[in-house]
Image 1 (cartoon, rainbow, N blue to C red):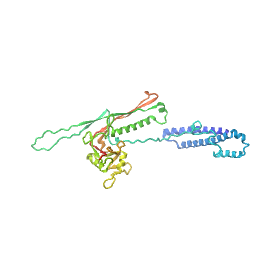
Image 2 (cartoon, one colour):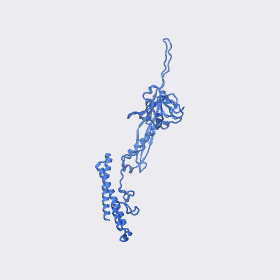
Image 3 (cartoon, rainbow, N blue to C red):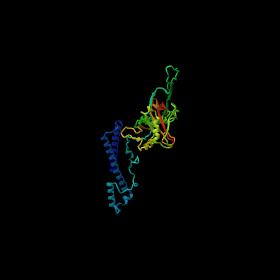
Length: 396
């Protein structure tokens, strides 16, 4: 029993020292992002000492309990195998094997807090495993404007002046004068309102407010990106795929069939390429989802050469017929009648409008003991030049 008491004292002392050193280590990580290697080594060494002391204490407790059992005390002198029993005790103390079964004594155990689990202090990694969400980065290719009102108006100069040949003595009647129009892009509101207790905000190891802001900003970005492609314009931006097929500008977007009822074809993509007017070609790019890119990567021309070319150097984009491919996961997968591919100069074709940026109102009063984070963003978007791009339709 004296040995057990001494071990308990040593364990308590080691635990207190471990807690002090570990708290110091965590403080350094929080302040500097890393801890002193010497301090890390000290924490590891003390943790190993605690583990070794715990194992020895467990073995001695088992033996002490077994030896104090009545059956052992009363019949020890009568037991013809007493010497063998004592040898087993010595073997157990040295090796920690044999002698007792697990259900004969109560052990110190890391899986029970009162029985020693409190001494186990797990560490939290500085790296968090996060789910990856795919989106459509339209802001990388469209025109983005910031305004201070609720809408942006863009003049549309879509008509032309009349002119014609005449002779020296011929009359010169009045010709038609061109007219201009205006395209209006209103902003729409995105919002979120998560909440957290004030205690969590005060005591958490991480900056919960910053973490929430990042999560909300990421979600809002994905929502608006989806609308820039597929939005119907009702309370949200209007997307590039939501207009009627045709060549009237404004209001219609040219659609080119693939030539196959259910898949993309090399000839269909070439037809789409040449449907675009020459002034839009230099800055043109392809938009498609990951699955569509995979299908395009397998297409060959009549000579057996792949029409898709991967980027062989770091930072070099994948190209199709010499033009970069933008991965847009909100574009539909290839299927019958789907609009899976778009090609054009989207800096001219689409305009995104921002009214300020992300705004967060911190409200600690409306829902005590919670703090509400009312977050808003006002954004709009619409096609501004309908002839600057064309769409591939999967159809015969």
